[in-house]
Amino acid sequence: MQKAEAQRIFNDLKNDRDLWISTWKEIGRYLAPSAGSFDDDAISKRGRKIDHKVLLDSSPLMAVEILCAGMVSGLTSPSRPWFELTLDDQKDHSNTVKRWLYDVKQTIENVFAKSNVYGTLHHFYQEIAVFGTAAFLLEENYDTVVHARAMTIGEFMLGENDFGRVDRFAREFYMTTWQMVQQFGLDNVPMAVKQQFKNKQFTSTHKICHLITPNTDRKPGQDGNKNMPWVSVYFMDGQNGFLRESGYEDFPVIAARWELNRVSDVYGHAPGWTTLGDVKMLQKLQKTMLVALDKATNPPVQVSAGVQGEINLLPGGITRYNSNTDAGVKPVFQANTDLKSLSYIIEQTKAQISKQFFADMFLMISNVDAGKMTATEVAERTQEKMMMLGPVLERLKNELLDPLIERTFNICLRAGILPQPPEEIQGRELHVSYISMIAQAQKAAALNTIRQGFSFAEELANANPSVMDNLDFDGALREGLAAIGATPKMIRAEEEVQNTRQNRAKAQQAAQQQAQLAQALQSAKTLADTPLNTGSALDAVAKAQGVETNA
Image (cartoon, rainbow, N blue to C red; front, side, top):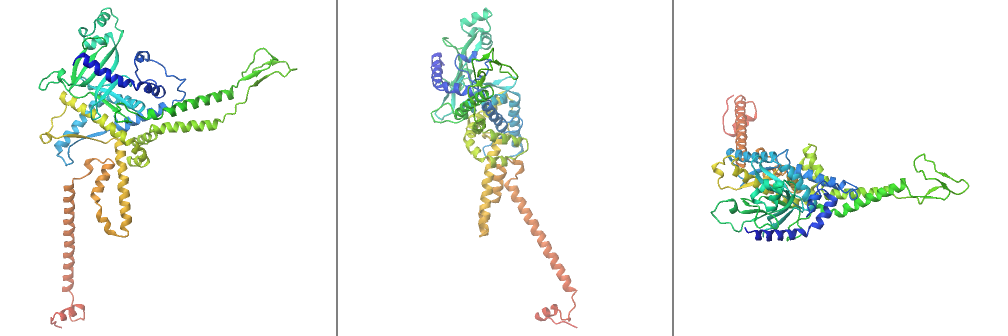
């Protein structure tokens, strides 16, 4: 790739990104004051305090934190399994295949646990919930296999392909002279940076541009990091060449959008966009409340000319005045603010903000981990919210979870730390199924449909029992168990179920025959012991058959 081409792609991505910055800045000011990196304020923003003149109420920040914690524990929990690997069919597989799938899953889970992936995911959820777009780099690492490099809004730029998938990435960031030499080598940095390094000006900062884009110049059959599917270049404005030019075997950027208002949008919208008005109103209401309280407890006063000396407004303070005149200190007006109504409006606004960030739903999901509720109970209570969150979770599955697992799998495969696959899965495609608390709660909503269907059928069966012939009880059971997250080990294969039923039917038939035989033997014995010519039923039968009996 030529420097001019890289600069052109970078500028195009930047021009599109810059259209969103003003909105991101305003959202960040009220909902994520420590997030965002915009132009040259990235350095000056380090260590900046939260603007408490704007943020008088921290409830919106707490709502964001609840959502982030809920997404971590409910979607990608570090403390419990949240995904499984399967093959491209639903057939029952041999123990060897099952063991290999389990070992691969365990390897990926261990890589996540030893790396900084989970910490990065928490930051990722905050960014996507507030700004609507989040991204991080997942790079190979010798010590931890993978290393996630977190990004903040304004620092990176994205581009899509014709399928709407992110396939181009660029970012602006700052490095010190020392970091540049360590990262790129003294021979590859510009002359000005070399001079600073020789003069021991190690802390001087420089803006670096990084671009990752599909390698359109790739030549099939040739090896080398410059001939990989994705090209990666680092450069500086005004520099003739690159600081580094390399590549990636697979796209290393994990980028997702909460939702897209328009198909042509590259960047997304999120609860941070929709709640901005409510958050502003909440801060204004809190300011009004504080002013009202201040006026009620420390009102402005008017002082007559007869007052002697200074006014003492402290408790027990004495202010002297001429008693022969109407001298004194009086409030200018009496504040009669309805603080109760104002408090009610504030609480309603807080509740609305919390609702927009799904705080109540995520608190319910946390009760599942605590053993206080089941996934089915959560689904029943939050089915409406699950429906609203469904498209978002599906997008996160496609843009966050699937690429994260696929990228990690490929890195582990290249590192040679995956177990040797059995021959029977050669050429088969691996699939990922999710078993997190949120995924189970979503599936549990389907259990209500099954129950409603059977209840309806039961009502009709009261009038016509034959309608129950339309229902597949085995299929309903399997669907219900899958909905509540039952493990495959709980469910027998269909062939095994049929064999069990056939054996049970044979055993029941044999027992029935045995009972009939015993009854026949007992009847024969009774018949043999019955005397004739006594006027019994046996005499009547014998006479009917033409049998002569002797007295």
